[in-house]
Image (cartoon, rainbow, N blue to C red):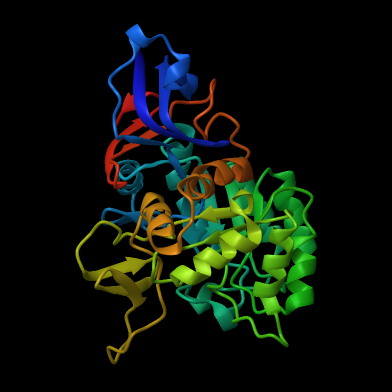
Length: 384
């Protein structure tokens, strides 16, 4: 099946105001200005905007289902929820849990990796810092254990694509080596480590490195104690790591998102949703793994006995929501925001067949209106 799409096309090298995407057999066959195509073959000019499909490297669920606790059908529904909102590739993120629970989740989700519903698994824990555990259950946070990680990696059979570790967890270097050898991203987060500890951790792995939701799950930066935030900005700014940010207007202020893009650049920023099961759902009671969550005004927080606001417990947006917000509220150029929502995450995960609108790559395409409302999702050239 072939198709020609005409409008504003966002490519890795910038925006083509009157551009054309030629799709054939599930791939991008050609992309360029309309003037480069035979006029007789072209559709009429339009105000449509075309972006690459979004890639979410940190997502716990959506549509009423969560990867840490739903059965396989529920997990598929969560992935479908995000697909319908423009995320054509995602990792299924777990939370800290007992070893037997993590093994059960790996077994449940393995078929979804194998059939391409999700691109792999992301383990957020259990080797984190209790001091900044956020919406992780402290009962299941433990010291780094290379033997346990070996068991998890063996059970997953290459399906673990990323794992969040605290920089100060025991045996960090050994854990990082195991993950790199398994082809997984080492992601530093939920860390109370100081500047030197975090900078050293980010420089340890030989493979790809990221920072799990920069600013969240770590102490605030102080001008005399730059801490994890300062170390992450330095290392990402040097091009040695990718900084995840949840720019949903809840986890970070718009100005913070603008600062990260200006400091680090879109080639080293990954916009993520950190979505949980309440994404796309009404306010109410939900869960994130073993913890109860109350969603009010679209904001998910841990449920507390006295009803006071608990810690932020993941997001309720999609990556495309975050991309559009970066443009509208943080002044990030659309091409840069799209790069952080798709191209940089693809490179982080080593996905060479997607992440941008370039000839030869998989036709994961989002069609938006002129005001950036999602109209259509194509995955591998097929309309969702």
